[in-house]
Amino acid sequence: MDGDVLGLALREALWVALQLGGPLLVALLAVGLVVSVFQALTQVQEASLAFLPKLAVLGGGLTLLGPFMAGVLRAYAAGLFDHMVALGGAP
Image 1 (cartoon, one colour):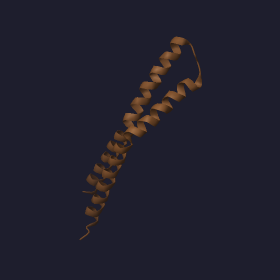
Image 2 (cartoon, one colour):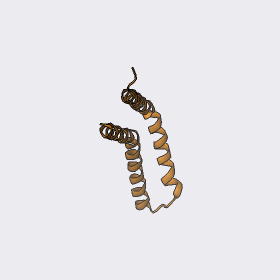
Image 3 (cartoon, helix red, strand yellow):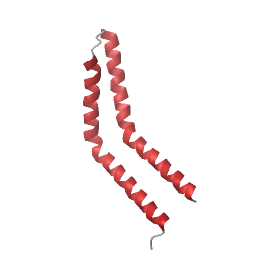
Image 4 (cartoon, one colour):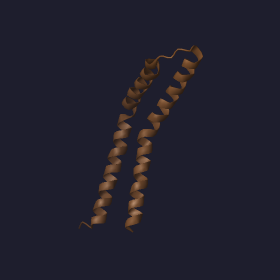
């Protein structure tokens, strides 16, 4: 019984991590790919050219996805606390 609950909590934690990090990582991967193709085509090897677009996309993504991320974390924490109360056998 406890192994099932622990496995469920672990699976839920991995799903939350995927929901929180996945969209931002995909966006940064796409921007990095576009910048690297641009650098290869123009032979401009500037370090800030690779860093600044990723930083801008990350800031914009966090601004746009912030409420979604907060909601996911809030729901996960509420579910985790509900499971703790159910396991503890509170009256």
